[in-house]
Image (cartoon, rainbow over all chains, first blue to last red; front, side, top):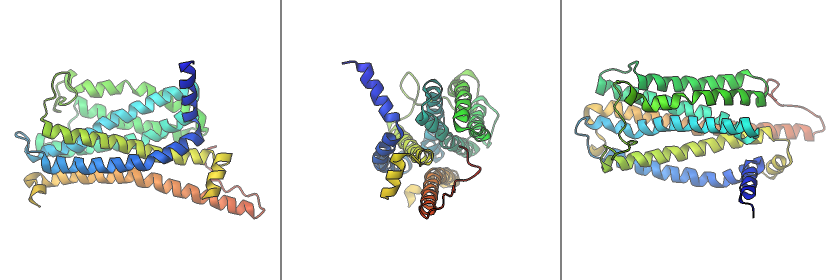
Amino acid sequence: MNVFASISRLYHQFASPPYFYRISGLWLPYIMGLCALLFAYGLYSGLILAPTDYEQGEAYRIIFVHVPAAWMSMFVYMVMAVTGMIALVWRLKLAEIVMINCAPIGASFTFLALATGSIWGKPMWNTWWVWDARLTSELLLLFLYFGVIALYNAIEDRRTAARAVAILAIVGVVNIPIIHYSVEWWNTLHQGPTVTKFDKPSIHLSMLIPLLVMAIAFKLFFIGSLFMRVRTELLKREKNSKWATALLGAK
Amino acid sequence: MDALDFGKYNLYIWASYGLTFIVLLWNVVVPLLAKNKLIKDIKRRNYLNSNGSQVDTDNMNEKK
């Protein structure tokens, strides 16, 4: 039995609009349900169980929303770039739809990371904003997302627009390592990494657990929100196809 | 609730968490509204077409 052939078949099956629509609809309630549970536990352990920080006092609790949002801002961009690559190479409609629907979600997470960072910066650094490497490169990420959305809307034909957006998304990936390593490459006001280090994370377990729980909750939320958007877009594009009319007729 | 009193950082913390809530809510409400609108549009088109008139109720500015 050829393994590649079966992987390829699975891949094409998953990428087919009716299959994806059906499966994502089955998964969606579980994803969002688990996400809600994790958010509830993350908030409880982050705001109530976790102890006060010896240096930053209570203010550090912003970390439990700021860091997951910032991680997701980069993760969503990578998903957008990878699906953009798939869209360019294999011309898969589903990949194009996933790619473009990542952009508003990613932009909202980037905005959240910048805004909560700013709110955190005021009591800790005594300023809302500084033009240092970490903050500036994250702001650039927000503009990249805006650029992707604007470019997609500027081109009439959806398939052409998706190809143009894919190229922009792939080129923009260069910004991701810059954001990640900015706190090491340059002297910045932003604190260094506390979790993603090769040696032991310099964060206590009682603070690390809520952070990771919130990070997983954010990730599930992204998948859920993305599925919702992608499903609607699939239905819109395929509304005259057999599966879509059958589905809508049954409702 | 003493456990949720963060002293002088109250405003900063609750502003951050409130903003997070708004962003998450936006990411659920916008797709839901889009879905409801689409289904309404399709049903309206099907209704008009079933009356015998071939009406294209698709948004004219919409990209094809």
